Image 1 (cartoon, protein in one colour):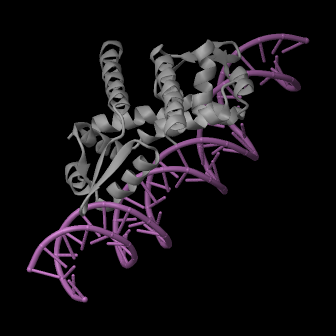
Image 2 (tube, rainbow over the protein chains, first blue to last red):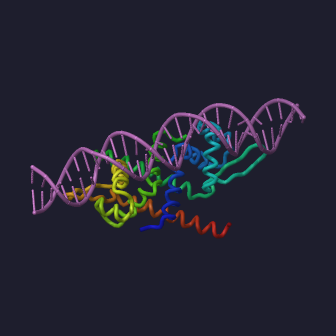
Image 3 (cartoon, chains in turn blue, cyan, purple, red):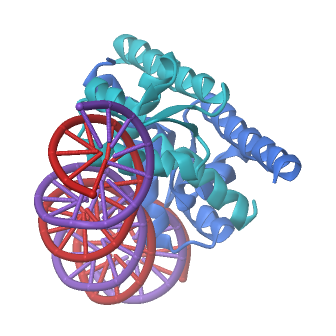
Length: 103
Length: 103
DNA sequence: CCTTTATATGAACATTTATTCATATGTTCA
DNA sequence: TGAACATATGAATAAATGTTCATATAAAGG
């Protein structure tokens, strides 16, 4: 059986992508770096909620921060994340197709 | 901005993999089909908890069921799942390496 | 300096989620 | 049929998580 701490890390890893607000933010950042205000506007999520989720993303090293005056810019910390999101999208797309056939 | 229902499906998809018990079960099933009793033994999770999580996995079409007498055998419903788990493992492994260098 | 604007954060609250406990259902076999 | 075993399930409970609200911090400009 696989080690407990690996299991924990793995669960934690997937957990990040399991929240719609975080996904929204990540999809916005897929484009390029944005400051918090822009993210709020694009996602239509409250400033506070965005800020809280950005903290989560920061703590899990999914985003990098760059301060510029009053604004704080966030960007994806590595290109891996784009791949993961794309993979997930493909997966649910394919599942859609399969169900068309079978059901 | 990406559609709400896609976002929901995507979040749901990742959510399955965000629980340690479900991951344990999936890793066991990576091998081949097992009945509930065997899964309980291998994962060291209570029968009830395993059963509840198997239901979740069933509902999300991650596992297929095959009844044989008293026993109920579960197996992964498609090979995709192995790929996803492997991808996750690779990711956290690589992150491990990066942190060795940087921190 | 004081006000405005941008972002972060803590506490309260609501919701979701996972586990346990007790028990139901279903199958086999004597 | 009834005892024994395998699995499922509902209700209760506990824990984790996300949002809001109020407010703190911090930078910029007048």
